[in-house]
Length: 89
Ligand SMILES: [Zn+2]
Image (cartoon, rainbow, N blue to C red; front, side, top):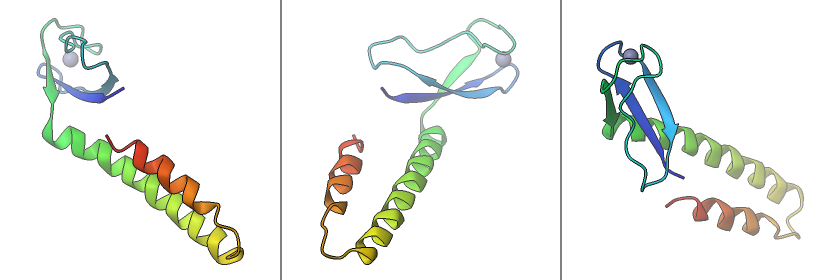
């Protein structure tokens, strides 16, 4: 499920919402309850999400690096690589 960032044009409240692609974009601000005040952020909002995901991947990779260094005979770290590449769409 993709994550969308919204910003309220009325109170500047910014939040992320999980929505299906087929769902209509949100319009009403959950903070100030003003109808039609939400604006969907595409550029900077998405960048923020990717940044967070990158942290997760690098953390995962460093962990597998350690495991690889610890036991070089085992090749179990390759399975975690396929898992992370799957989520990149
Ligand atoms: Zn608001």
